[in-house]
Length: 114
Length: 113
Image 1: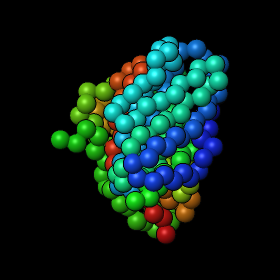
Image 2 (image 1 turned 180 degrees about the vertical axis):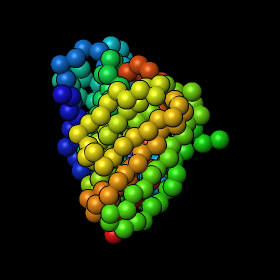
Image 3 (image 1 turned 90 degrees about the vertical axis):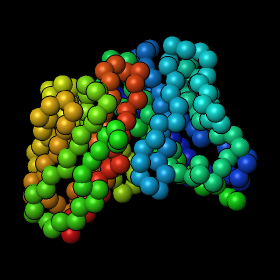
Image 4 (image 1 turned 45 degrees about the vertical axis):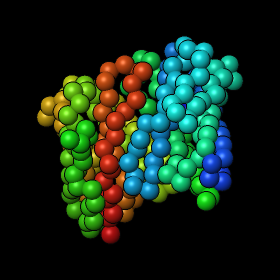
């Protein structure tokens, strides 16, 4: 079974600085997708960024980018120019190319210090 | 228009009661899901339906029963509620195929007293 591990329960960063959230996963499959979701205090789950495992190029969405290391099974999220509105729980998630299930990590609570 | 809508948003009930949570999506997705988020924020899948057919049924007590009248609706009925059922329940939907992320509803916070 696939597992996703986020080893940082909490992180904090100064506003306008850069922070990186870590995620590792375990799978025997070669074709899969990885996601980062954000859950602010409003509780809504918001898709931040996705990465296809077959693509070597790291995904980027504005201030959010990933460092995808397939051999190491690592998928970290970098947030540049952190803003107060980035404060939230961040979840890393894995989805097989053939299965429907999205498997989540334990989450990292990100605090932005003004 | 809300893409995935859940009702109610909050539910407080006594132990032993039966309750339902409703979910509707207007995205035309084929697959819908129920996830449970516990007090530690961990998200775990409970059920998944594809075009009204149950395709994922994780280890969930029989007191939980999903029902999908059509592919746009997935309801969750819970019998004989227990204190440990207190959690946030999320409905989600996605297109078929692993490359698509889920679109989540806003969650239902269930409190059993």
